[in-house]
Length: 223
Image 1 (cartoon, rainbow, N blue to C red):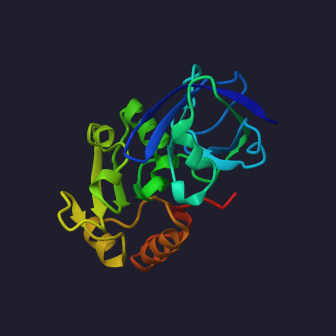
Image 2: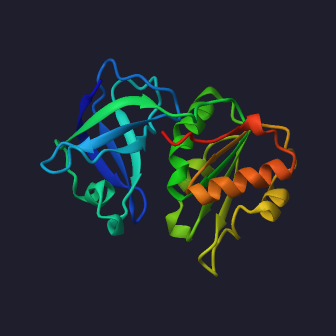
């Protein structure tokens, strides 16, 4: 089944990331962390669908929100995002995705890989049941998406890792095995991992080496 979504608002979140708010069809259902494939309803782009994660909560019936990073060098859908305006439409597919809420845990994200975790962490914050740790890796300080919101979530521990800026205000480094061993004391818990494929593979391997159970490491299944 497909849905036509109409853009209500668009605003920048970082220098290259945007929050898009659409109307929500009554039968558009999803779980926090899941995504939909959508394509721009424009000539030449209707067959160019890409997966994007809903960052609004499933119980917010009046809107659908996405946080999307634009990649001008990719010559694709995200390159067009900064030029979208209210009234533009996209064609969305059914929702899916393996990253859903499995309870409190450690959330390890790389760049735009934070998006499946936004709705899950917002849901925990709303319920007052946080007890979560966010480890968020980026190239520079200005790449950190929604830092202010995460910093204000009661009960959420945050560790921001920056690998490409020598004067970072945060932790210098990447989420490798050594860094994870320093940041995490308990490996008998649930781990959520999302980001570039090579990062996800490396983090999964490191977590297992450090004692995490494979069935407690939640990653996307490549749909």
